[in-house]
Structures are given as C-alpha cells and as structure tokens.
Amino acid sequence: MILAEPNNVVIGGVLGNDAPDRLRDVTERHSPKRFARVRVFPGRLLPANGGTEPRAMEKRVEGAWIIHHSRKLRGVQPPQLQYEQLDFAGRCGVLLSALAGSRQLQLSTSRLNALARANGVSMRLEMPAILDELQRRRLIDRGPEAIEVLGLTSRQTLEHTASIFSESSPEAEETASLELAEQCSQSPVAESRAKEYIGDAFKLSRMAGEAALLSWEQIGFLDVARVDEKAVYFNGNLFRREDIGRVQAVLATLTADEERKVAEASTALGASGCLPKEALLRILGARLYSKMCSIGFLDENTIGNESGTFTFVTRPSAFCKFAGDASAPCANVA
Image (cartoon, rainbow, N blue to C red; front, side, top):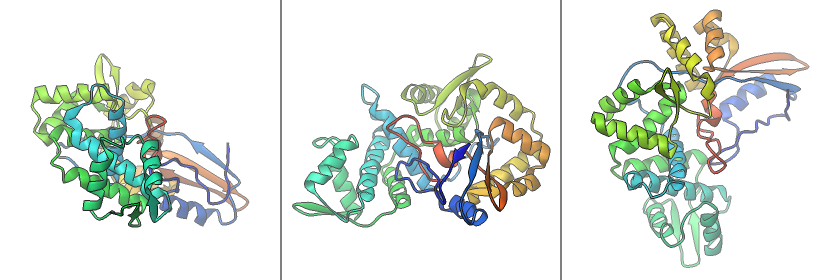
C-alpha cells in the first residue's frame, strides 16, 4: 500500500518532477476529493513484433534517450569517439535542462558555472562549445556578466536535444543505439532479431552490427541476459533479468490475432498515456489481458476512496525506462 496526497504522483525526472498531465487528469477525474490508498500492481512491458524499418520516434523520447546514453558514456574510459555527436547533444541537453529548470530567466556567470559543475560539464573543454550551440539556436542570449534563458519547457528541452543530435550528421551506430534502446523498452529483443533490425534499418554490415551490439552492452546502453545460451537485450529498468526467459516464452505463443490486439492496445496507451481497465479488456479480452499483465506489458493501478475504486492501466515505460543509476533518473516523456 502507498499513501498518496491529493493530485500528487511522485515520479523522478531528468527534466523535473511533474506528473504526466494525462495521468493526472484521469486520477483527478475519478478521485474528486482525495486519494485514500493507492495499490500499485507491478508490471514490466512487451514488444512490437516484426518489421525492420526504424519507427518514427517522438523527438521528446529521442531526446531523453540521447541524455541517457550521454550519461552512460561519461563512465567509459577511454572516451568512445565513435559516439561523439551523441555525447555532445546529450551534454547540451543536460545543461539546457539545468538552465531551464533553474526557474530564473537570467543567470549570473557564477550561477551558470555552478550548474555546469553540478551536471558534470567541463568548464574549459565543454562549456564554450555547448554555449555556442545553444546561442546559435537562440535558446540562450549571452551577455558579459550573465546569460538569459529564453523560456523553455521540459518537453522543449528534450526536443531541442534531439534536433541538435539529428542535425549533427550522426553515425549510423549512434542513431541505431537509440532506436534499439527504445525497442528493448517495448519488449526483450533476441540477439538474432537485433542484428537483423540494425543491419536492415541502418545498413550496418554483419561485422559492424556485432561490434555495435558488443559496444552498447559494454557501455550500458542495453542490458543483456542469456536465455538458452543466446543473448537477449532488454531494458533493466522495466524487466527483471530472471523474468526474461518467461517473457520470451509467452511472446512466442501469441497468435497473429493476439499480436494485432496487443499492437492496438499499445497504440492506444501510447496515444492516451493511460486508459481505464475496461477499455483494455475490450481490446484484448480477459485472457489475453491477464497474459499481458503476467509478463509486464501493463501496469495496473487501482485508486480507492470514499466514492469507490477505479482501475487504470499504464505502460511502465511512461515512468522509468530511462533510469539507470543515480545520475540518470526517470524521465517523464511518455
């Protein structure tokens, strides 16, 4: 049981701690006075099957993955220069997020330097290039004694991070690392499937694809488990390592019609953020709904108060798929 204050959902964020608007709207609508107790039924998540074309990722989601990957690159020695554009865009995003989150339109040079140090940005080696990029995009205005931040929301900072990356002519391996990380947040991806996907979608040779996967595993872009001596990539913030084999086994039993229903449910949740349980039952049916909950495709949440109870369903990745360590907390982008 979790005691909850009215209108308060505690979710960490790369760019702040605001609860997703759509989730807040639903909970407020069905709990007009205050939450009594909230029972959270944990889930993990599931896949989209088939297809080798890279899916259009929302810019805010891409921006969050860029920041996630950049944070992972900080802990790697020697520096991984093949991910230079990814790292630079991520560092721009981190500093821009800090500036936007300061709630000050003007920041003194000393305050700017303090924010940079707190976010691991090198004053001498990185700060000048980052500030030049942000000013070139008219996101800040630099003066001799201070800088002015041109009013940005959390969502906008993520979108600008994605734009900085996409306009820097990134290598195929850099873009592929973001796309596969997002796919692994939908469901675990077998090594053979991952190789096929990045080879076809990003035109990587077999050798380049294998080298990229090994690199991503070592850096921490992806988590990996062994199932029947074969590698399976997954998001460790959403899937427990010991569950990967069971998840893979259940997914293998889905019929074509069940896969279609799962895709429909995934699309509906992606569009709305959360849905009443009854809406998901209409799409999936009771048996398939139960199966998807058992492997973590859905997070089922029940809110109860004096007016009764209401159960709504979310995707776990809406809250914590970007968390990896203390330096990379959850991001509210879904």
